[in-house]
Each structure stands twice: as C-alpha cells, then as structure tokens.
Image (cartoon, rainbow, N blue to C red):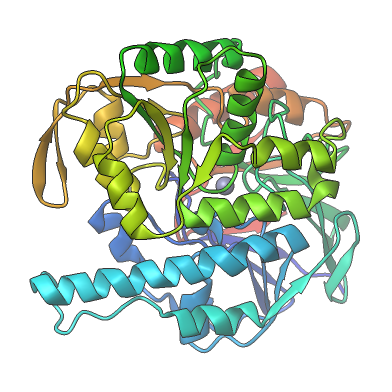
Amino acid sequence: MSYQLQLQFFGAAQTVTGSKTLLTYDGKKYLIDCGLFQGPKEIRQKNWEDSPELKNLSAIVLTHAHIDHSGYLPRMSSLGYTGPVYSTVGTYDLCKIMLIDAAYLQEEDARFANQKKYSSNSPALPLYTAKDAEKILQQFHSVPFYEWKQLAPNLSFRFLRAGHILGSAVLQISFMSPAGMKILTFTGDLGNSRSFILRDPDPVIESDFLVCESTYGDRVQPREDIFQQVSQIVSKVIGRGGTLIVPAFSVGRTQELLYIMSRLIRDGKIPSVPIYLDSPMAQTATDIYRKHAEELKSDIQDGYLQAHLTGVVFREIRDSDQSMLLCMSTEPKIVISAAGMLTGGRVLHHLKAKLPDEKSGVLFVGYQGVGTKGLLLKSGWKDIRIHQQKVSVEAEIFSIEQLSAHADADDLLKWVGAMKKRPGLTFINHGEKNASETLGYLFRTELEMKCIIAEENKVYTLE
Ligand SMILES: [Zn+2]
C-alpha cells in the first residue's frame, strides 16, 4: 500500500515561534515539534487556541529543546496526549530543565495577573503547570543519531546532527508514496559551522522534499574575529569602571560566551574582572553540555571544556537574594544573565539598575524578536519600560551578530546546494515574512529550486 503524505503548519509559518508541523500519513497523525508561541501578547495568545487537528496524535517528534520547538508539550499533556515523544538524548536532558522552567513561568504569569487583576478571565489560569511538564517528560523516548526508527509500516524517521544547540537534530522522514520511497527532510533549526563548542551540522546527501527554516534567510552574519570584538567591548566598558550586561539564552550562546571569555582571560586579552553567570538554568545547561562530550567538537576534550566552563573567574549566582545584591554592586564586572530577548528573568533587574549608568554597557549576542524589549534596546530606543517603570537608557548598547546558533542565508544556500539530489519541492518556514521570502527568492534564483512559503493552517499534499 502507498499513501500520500500531508503537511500542515500550526506555527513558525511566516513567524519564528510556535513550531508545530502536523504530518498525516495513512490515516494517522504525527506532530513534528511542539513549540510555544513567544513574544508580544497577541502572539502568545495563540497558545490558548487548542486546534482540534492536534488531537489523537500517534507520536510527537522533536528536533530540539528550544521552547519555541518544545514548550507546548506540557499543554499537550494537559489536553490528554499520552503517546510517545521522540527526541535525541541531549534534547531530553535539556527538556528536563527547560519544560519545568517554562511551566514555572506560566504559573508565575498567572499568579501575577491575578495579583494585579490584569486578566480578563478571572482567575487567570496558567497555560500549564509543572505537573503537566513532569507528566510529558515521562513520555520521552530517546533515539540515537543516524538510527532509523519506524513510526508505522512504510514510515520511519532518523536524526542527523543540526549543530544548533546540544542535542539538536535535522529530521529525515522516509515514506512510501505512490511514486516509491521518498525522503522528507526537516531542518528544524539548522546551525552553522562556526560554533566553538558543538560539532558541525551533518550534510544531507539527498532529499525529495524539504522543510527549511529561514530565521536568518535575508541576512549574512559577519565573519569577523569574535575574540577581538568581545575583547574590545569588554575592555572599553571595564576600562571606564562600568558593568557589562550580556543577555544570553541559557542554552547555547551562554556556553559559547563562557568559552570565548575564558580564552580571552587565559590569553591576557581582557582584564581579569569577575564574570557572573546569574542564571541557574544556564548553569544547569552548562553541566548538561559537559556531560555530552560526544556532541562537542573533537578538539574540545572533556577536561578542557570542564576547565574552560568552570574557570575560577566565573562566579555562579544561585539564589535570588545574591542576584539582587549583585544588581546593586558598582564594581566593574561582566554579568551573563537570561532571558536573551529580555522577555523576563533576572537580566531585567540588572538592566533596571545599569541602563541609566553611562559607564555601563549591554552586549546583545543573539536574535531579538519583533515585539521584544531586546529589539527596542538594540534599535536605539532611549526609554524602555521594565516592571511597569520607565527606565532611561544611558548605557552603551553593543551587538555582535555572529554568535547566532542559526545558519544564515549563505550557510543555507551552501548546505542545500551541496545535496547530490536537491529537493523537488521546498517549504520555507520558521522566519519572519521578509526572511522567508528572501530565502525563497535565493533558492529559486541560485539553485533553481521550487519553493513555497509555508502558510499557517493550509494543508499541503506532497506529490
Ligand atoms: Zn532553536
């Protein structure tokens, strides 16, 4: 028997969050990624629209642990999903901390809304709770890289390395179609080969269909010497006695930054000031990176990474009282703290304290989504609101683009261009509209590929 495979995008279509792609085959439904919508309220509101199409799933397959790919899982659990969740072991380990944290934030938000009587529903309810997160974590099954795993007769999948964050995978689905066996490849979030820590993305030799992310589909990241840039910024801010605040995502960029800074200190390129890692989640994530040596670049030996990520210069701030004291301190220092897009977390307290200080600086090292405080600051906004208070921005704002964990337009063209057999049809997802359309244009003109910009809710049949 052969069947047609259908795709339907329930998020990350002309936007970057909420990745959920429904795959239908032989009357059964599977979900590729189960991400949360993040950003401004009208986008987050979409997390409450429980699509009837996402009921009665046979399995969920995760490409990686980032919340915009995994953070809707506990909601699925609260809606009654009891089936398997397949991921790599690295993704599972990260999900154990990230989903519990996401649940805690949901509960916190609901509590806050009830206190301030914000919510139009009273009482405000969390989207899900830590119990839901714990429940879905019991449903995880780890699948090793490269091994084919059967979902149903004539339908299998395997993970290849995506080089984006620890455990991240490109997903390949093999299925029997009326025209024979076909391969559908999902990039998930594709990394680039410029990580100092993670192994490079695997090449894909051939694919009949492709779903390709386009976060940086309209940009080429600079390839300048990042060690030199970081050392210049640190020296400038520390030289005038300020604090350098680095808002960083707990997973991925934080570990790259720790590595870069530890090398700069070792080589005497930056003054030996304290570096505070003020994010319990980033600390745990760093421990998970150390645990999975098989995912790291071969020149980073276990002991070496250990030494570099836990050097004596790093001070881990575990409790929130210590964090508050750190906010008030005026000693020159570097503070790495989450959340990376300033959507919450301890970094907001550091910013409230240091943004009005012209000696201090903020270093952005990652993508800032539309509708985030991070984007406002990065765009030069001089007054921002933190915890309902207006804060004037006197600190210097820096940004470094090349620490991104995503492939840029040039990387994507090279990665797809290297396939011996290129996809006959490509869906472009996971990017703002402009980025997706630009990447589509580049694929069409440079590689003569047939591309569709994924539209939310529309059903696509692969033929
Ligand atoms: Zn990601």
